[in-house]
Length: 148
Image (tube, rainbow, N blue to C red; front, top):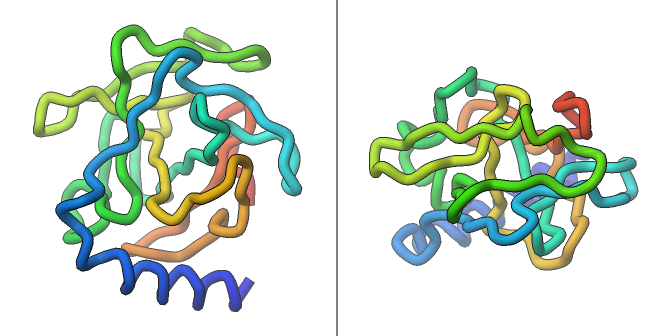
């Protein structure tokens, strides 16, 4: 776990200068779905990339937006059109919140959702449980509970 956090810190430092290059993660078709990973089934975007929740957030509040460089590393998962869910997830639990920019960020069971700029392969879980920008970043299961 310590090795993952050190890697995250180093990765964060490497990504921060690219702040203008990464602003948001867009969802498409099946907006969010479940994927089997080393940590069990977790919510991913339609490309199979792990999505995250941020512990300081609350319903309809994306705390990351107000922290310098946070969204460069953990971009909000944005809805394009009508958001949908894959099998095993409840459509009524998928909502959006409106960001200051007017963009719509996905929220599942009251957790604003984020991508991670360092995600490379579908179903990666190495950054789940990372401590960055004043809180922990966890995956979510189908019940909307944090996966650690």
